[in-house]
Image (cartoon, rainbow, N blue to C red):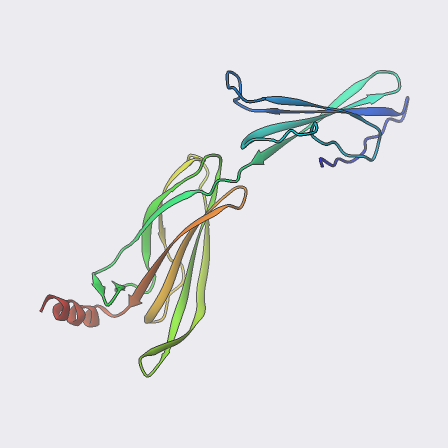
Length: 212
């Protein structure tokens, strides 16, 4: 149901409201591009015609207010219908791999990748969960850092080639890293990496061991 705030008319008084909804960039397509939502009296909402559903895309909802003298005024709201998850690629700058973990020599890891969406990309979120171990066995994970990077203004709403450097300084150790993309509707997609943040001299020893 489409709800709206009732208007007012100090002279003639509000008589009724008429609703309609139309899809942007729909001309020439085979789908239904607009619906007449009928008329209602104050304090009630609109519904789509029986058996009709909106398709993914950007829609403009319009409510026209009529007073008892026949004068009108319009109010509009842009609606985004999106049930498709964004796409994401990601890579973390690293110095090699050991036992399934990317070896990272920076306590503020850097990453780069690409986010795509059918409508509007919203943001990038990066989370680091530190792995806690006892006698060499991982026993738990603790959220060590979570950062959000909004899509910069001027960047395409459907394709974002991003680079990001972690603002926090992580402790040395092993982490589960999740890089997650969000679109405007809240749909998500993510990539997960296992990283080991170490001083360069320790990484050198591990790399030599792998090569040997």
